Amino acid sequence: MKTLHGFIILYDAVCPLCRVYTNAFVHSGMLEKQGRAAYQEMPAQCEPYVDRQRAVNEIALVNSATGEVYYGIESLLKILGNAWPVFRPLFSSRWFVGVMKILYGFISYNRRIFLPVAIGAEKATLMPAFHKGYRASWLVFSWLLISVILHWYGAELSPLVPRGTWFRELLVCGGQLLFQGAIVAIVAPRKAWDYLGNMMVVSFLGAIALLFIGLILKAAQANAFWYTGAFLLTAAAMLMEHARRCSLLEMGVGYSISWIMYRLLLAVFIIN
Image (cartoon, rainbow, N blue to C red; front, side, top):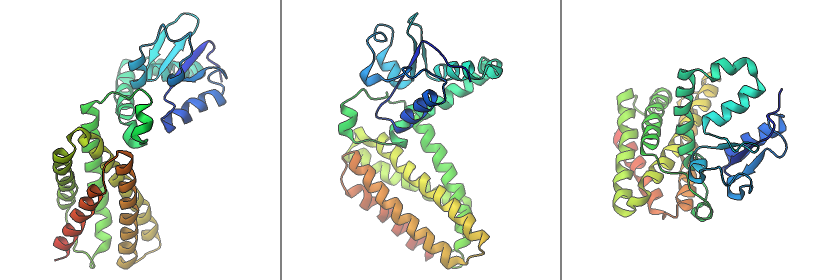
């Protein structure tokens, strides 16, 4: 594996994912030992060449000899293409780079909701810019996928819980977005997008947990009581994670109360 010499990648020290994959570049030999630095502590030789805000949004790779800077997916493809030359034609393909730019932007601009940090920690450093398109894309993507998983899992709750259609699950998940969105838009409008993004991460994690649990229970030929018990335990874990994320956003416990109240009222409506 070839090492990319004379380059420094500037990562977000507050982002766990950024720390992990840039560290992997160094440990695998793709970058030199000194080829990684946090943008919060940017090396002096990089500062004249780097657009600091852009480097926050899109990870920067700096050629310390020439001052040339690559941003975002281009910086990652530069490293990977050097390590694996056989993939260079793919990495230089217009359509591939275009698709990867969208995927990279989706992850990068939403990274603080995927792996949140306390507001105090965010204030101490530059924040990724807010991108309404990528945030809305996350809300829609998670809403649709969660609805599919819940519809599949919900079929196993019968006869304890009446079996519904996928459209019902779509309305349930969408209703939660609208219900909580209306509350936060009135009480804390500046935090609405961040809150809704975090809320859907909680629901997404819960749905993924139910997917794996459901597969295990199906293999074990468990009955509806096991599925229902697992669902309730997952919902309890989701409530704790929701409360934790609200705390990180410096939002009160009221949002967690309204979150669980919506689900309880809906459960009563569905069962009856």
